[in-house]
Length: 252
Image (cartoon, rainbow, N blue to C red; front, side):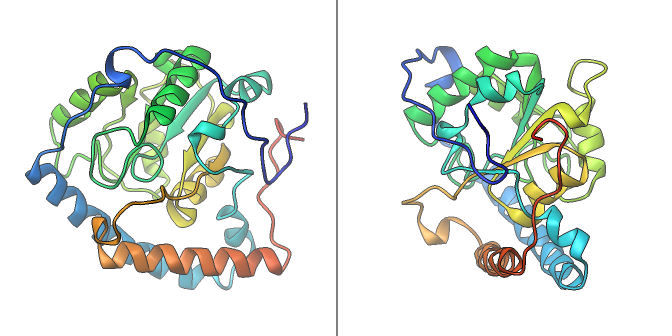
């Protein structure tokens, strides 16, 4: 089975019972949601500024392009990634696992896909790194991160720095088993200038998913929606100019 540098074949549907936290969900508290929204909006402005610099930096452009592009986590072949030498997985939250500012996994298919991921890599090697969940600026004691970890059945890393600050990766790696190398971690997310860029900069294998369909436009801030559009236009243009994702030794 071959893995292309820019895409991965969709996985066949597999039956997988998702127990415990995978199927339970409930609405997120209003205070947590509003804090997360403020955090996302603030960071989006920083990403917009970063895009201006990327326009003139070919190496930085390549960092925004994923090694693998799929529709959703449902289509990720976890077993193939494990066979290629990957030992851990980091995932974004909004539009990767849930709708924005919700704690409910987007669908049963997403829950089943994460059940397969945990079975493949082990719970201690599957973590969420999000700019809306686990950020110490509004969850200083990690209570929300712990609650979501129990709800989903895999960990939510607490961190001080927002993606794409590379220091957030240093923080995230601390929750993995000792000796985990960044080059053996898969980063899964939907945003080019945060998720993909920070994963590539750390030397990880990056997988980009598409935003979930059917999510109300007003579920995200105007700044976030604008930044997403800018990202899509820029990365499409750079691909047209021949830019490619960084090479990775486990995908050669």
